[in-house]
Length: 284
Image 1 (tube, rainbow, N blue to C red):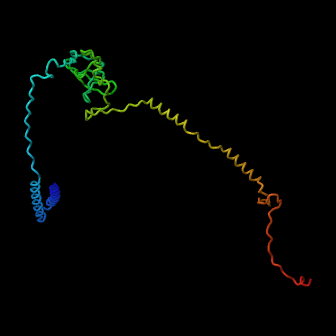
Image 2: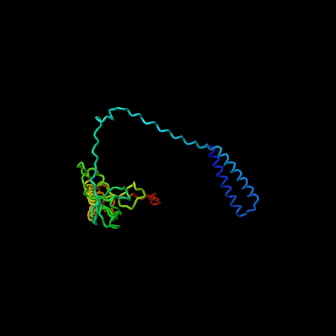
Image 3: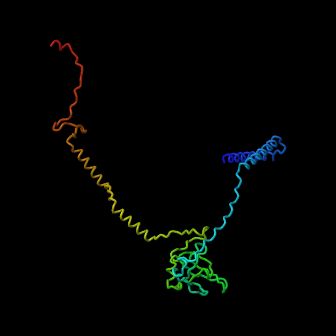
């Protein structure tokens, strides 16, 4: 298989080169080099095609049809075939014969959704067209904005007759009322039914309000920022405390630090000066 793949790749490459040469020959048909190259490429492609044909396996002949197996020999007597041991067949459920029903406009019927899953759904007849012998009913499904053009065979009356065994028809086929046709045009795939999601807005609003109320109860109350007046009052108290501090003392219009109870201002260091000797001092 690898040889076949490599040969196919070579043929593809030679074919691409041949296309380029053919394009060049369109512009210059008399070019000897291009003509010679074209001949070589044609020969190479032909040889590769022959090799590829030899490597590819021939198709196997179709299998012969199997001869049918002989039917089993039926025994003369068996317990299953004896009439004494056979179960009585269950009575078939036969619906009462219904003649052709003539529907009128605004009649409620069970209509077949022929463009979808071909099941029956509650609908209302909006108009009637066609002939009296073969009328065409235009119905609209009750819960959806989907219309269909149906014949009498595709309609059923809402109040169906009971069957022979007395079983209600609604119990025999409960699936006719459960499915609902989708809100859509004829789908590309009749087996797929897509419908818009139905949301109860009132219930969703109640759930949202309940969630908000629960969130308010759990969350702690945020601390309120103090008012500007309270901040200013605290600031003035701090300034008043600072002015009355025992470490603050007045000295020449400025505040300097001193020891408690000294009663004097801070002393300055004495300045150093050079002593000058005079002659009068020596005589004395």
